[in-house]
Image (cartoon, rainbow, N blue to C red; front, side, top):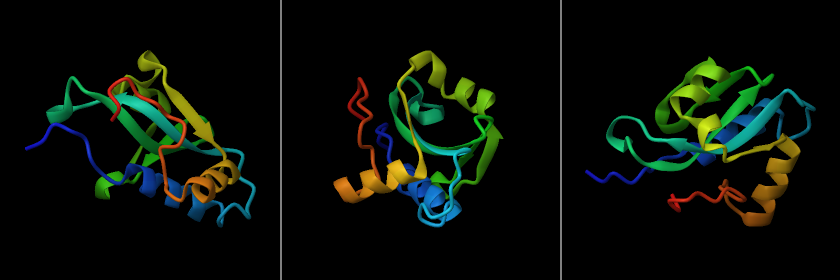
Length: 118
């Protein structure tokens, strides 16, 4: 089995923030789409790669990627993925995400550049 990460995190996170904000028509400044470089777990241990999720009130993470429904305190989620330690994080409002989706014609990543290229 390949150690290269794969999945639907960018699409899942983008679709989630679009649903929460009614495609940007509902102002939700407490909700952000996050693209971040994370440290892999399990089979992906030792790899760093790009990942996407949604952040609420700067306190909770919702990650629906790969069929999961992870709801976790931001501090814990960031600790597990070593997100603060790596320090490569970009947050988007729903309106910013919609503009990026329209400009690039995909769900991301748009601005996140990782050392591994993944």
